[in-house]
Image (cartoon, rainbow, N blue to C red; front, side):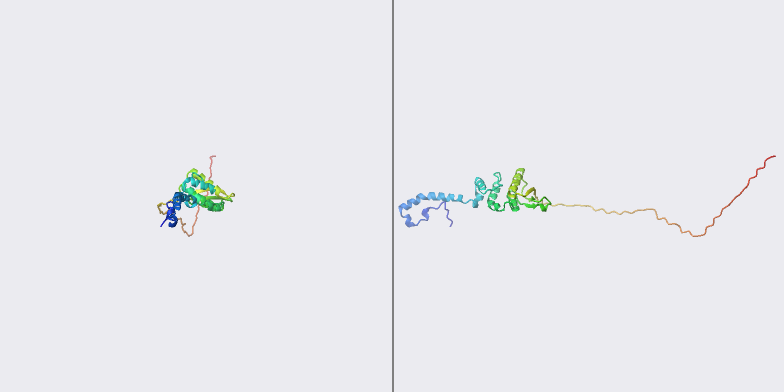
Length: 216
């Protein structure tokens, strides 16, 4: 059986021998409404366990109390609750890659810290990659960069942030294959005739002399 402290009366738990006294019974009757009010307000003593049901203005006050450095009152209520709930654990990791990854995941979804030696950058530089979730507007990106700069250690420098999108679709590829053959047709190869034999060469030598007779 569940007992609701906000509705219970002292007369329900007082021993009958005490309630038989008229003075005690009168005191109990007077105290009942005050005890029930105290019971109803006990919930305000439990804050961390009730973050998901607390009003937004209470969440803002808790963020100030727990020194959530990258907290912004313009964030969505769910993001505020997440930051406040994990603020104590985050302060223990502040200045580490784990803290940077945490603040990015709290504002958006998912993140990978790429150190400078992973992408041939300059020493002590890093990138935040593989950020998932909806593409943010410029204001959210500015808040994200500000939160990263608060979470990182002083010597590290942010080179940039990169978003990851998984697109699930079917891609069809087509192609064509062409075969051809080249035949080069040229002049037939010349082959010198194989003529073997004796050759005789003759010639004619003609000599003449001309005499002119003149009249005396």
